[in-house]
Length: 168
Image (cartoon, rainbow, N blue to C red; front, side, top):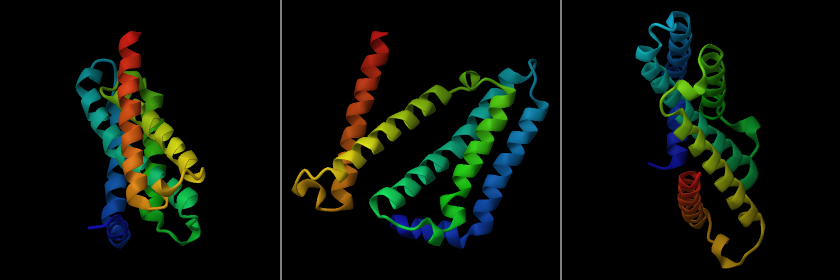
């Protein structure tokens, strides 16, 4: 299965994807209504699951949008709203709704998820700069070489970030 087939699958199964993200939004609203100081310790793992369930597809959709715009030069007028924009919109809404009720630092795993978002963002910017700067044959090869470079830079940033955090 290719990435394009996966995007086509999301576009073809609109009701399932829409139902998934709608359920997450409804669960988020329900959790924020019933959460209080006495039951927060029990519900924080449910909140963490909701954050992960919406943030991972949202991050991937943001990367897909950025890749389409910056690397492919594609027009976003011709893409599926369900596959490209719904995960991002749902991610933003869910994080806003939850952050109004609880502090995101109290949700287990959110610090690691936010660090992952920062590392992926920095890596994407570095790869974009490297791709736009002509360094030779390395990036002429196409997407596979670009993906390998992305993973190498991501690994270097991850190791650097972990060493930096241990020093503090």
